[in-house]
Amino acid sequence: MKKESVNATRYGNGALASFVRLLSLFATLVATPSFISCASSTGASALPSTDYPIDGPWELVFEDDFDGTALDSETWTALERGENWNNEDQAYTPANASVADGFLVLSSRRESWTGPVNSSGHPDEALGPVTRAYTSAQGQTKGKRSWLYGKFECRAKVGPTTGTLDAIWMCAEDGSWPPEIDIAEILGGERHALHMTNHYGTASDHRMNSGSFTADVDLAADYRVYSVEWEPSEIRWYLDGVLRYSTRSGVPAKPFYFIICPAIGPDWTGDPDETSEFPSALTVDWVRVWQRK
Image 1 (tube, rainbow, N blue to C red):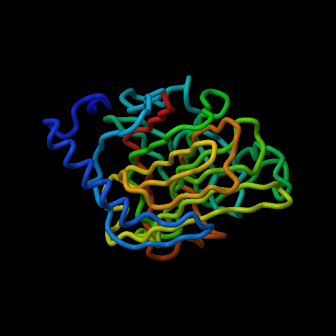
Image 2 (tube, rainbow, N blue to C red):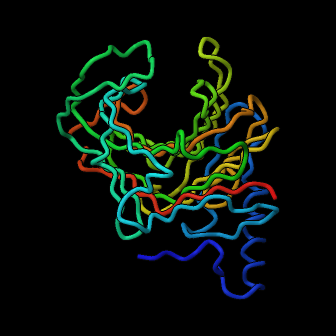
């Protein structure tokens, strides 16, 4: 399936496009949280889960519509790794990352896997082969594409499975942690809640600003556009083009790369239970990066 180009007309004539933008602005004004370290708001997403107009002086610098038959190896790496960071249950395998019909599908499966740790120095992970009870997939652009500041967007449909954590996020290209920007995190067992976080400080003095938005719809029921606008003095999070959280604290100032993955248990989301259905999938329609003109 060849999807519509980002530059194509979204809403027909100019008058209708202006009306849609006014509706979006009104929704933003009534729903915008304060610049605080933790925020929560409730209500439905104001726009449908389709493309929406980009307002302001933004220039498209990267776009992947996943129109091929495999991940673009010049942009993405599909990890093979038994190591994980939050006592999670999965190993990441390239076999679980597939591209077809204009979508990237990152699958999670209940299956035994034994393979390399591929350690990057995490102190809690022993070197050598490990065995995991689940497999999943992680696509990342580290070492291939990174950006300093911009508008980062991903149109995706998250999975509905309890025990999974679907994440769209970014980390520093130089390998340091923190910083980290979590564009969107959705727990499979709490599919109305969108979590948005900025991690900053140092490894020994980790700090974060975190916001959550509770929608009155199941976020796993349809495709949604998850995005951040990251600027030198502020980070703003959006769901379907509507501002849901922002912070001015701990804004990073180094290039970041893109990461998309479904993780499985347990520190935050907990282990899958008897209601969990596998395989599950995080399905991505497109990824776009914009920067100021």
